[in-house]
Length: 175
Image 1 (cartoon, one colour):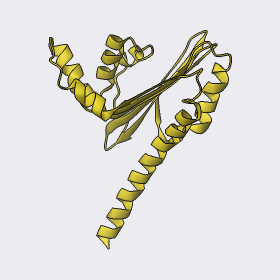
Image 2 (cartoon, helix red, strand yellow):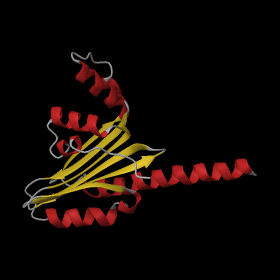
Image 3 (tube, one colour):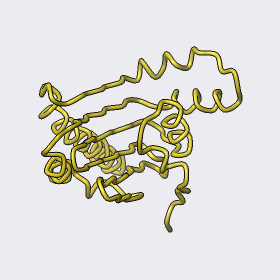
Image 4 (cartoon, one colour):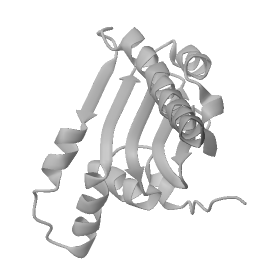
């Protein structure tokens, strides 16, 4: 009986994780064929190829190690969008935000940016970033085993706007 209950709990966790990813996929699939959007999808295989690279510095070695733990990346962006604010609001209606913990919100005079995480067994399994501005919209989902400081460094090296805010943050689990 205990095995059946344990198997049921595992199934619920797996299905709810798949549902959340599926909900994000629904948002992406709604717009990824729209030519006015830029869409990027990186598979775990691509991240795995980075681990074969040689690191010149200890920092590069740390970054390659962090990359090796990633399972995927999806980015959907629209520049020069009059509908950027409405897309930002729509993202929050289609993506199951209640399944995430909000890490940080950044607001400037021309854009709003929110970072969310999903944790499994005390480890960050997904980082979600949603950006909406006067004429700019972006949603990014990064999943795998995530170290926020390393992701900030990767973002800085790859010039991914917004991720630099993560470097200033120290994520401690709330008890």
